Image 1 (spheres, rainbow, N blue to C red):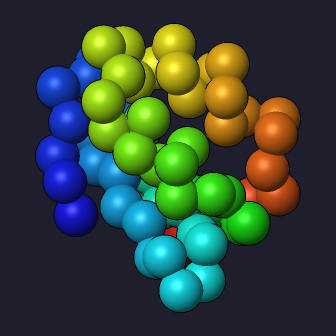
Image 2 (image 1 turned 90 degrees about the vertical axis):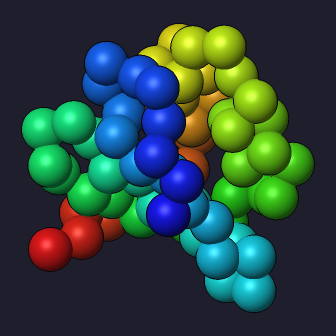
Length: 68
């Protein structure tokens, strides 16, 4: 799982077969986001600010579940 240089997001990962994005926040909370296109994941990886990208393009756009 790639580590990020972000004050809010610690790790992001993507399961292409399931189209599932996995996000681990610096708080330790982990979430899975469903039906995320691969291009969104790649844009997320390249984003200068992971937090800004997450808030604009992922949060409130995809169904999610907290992972334990």
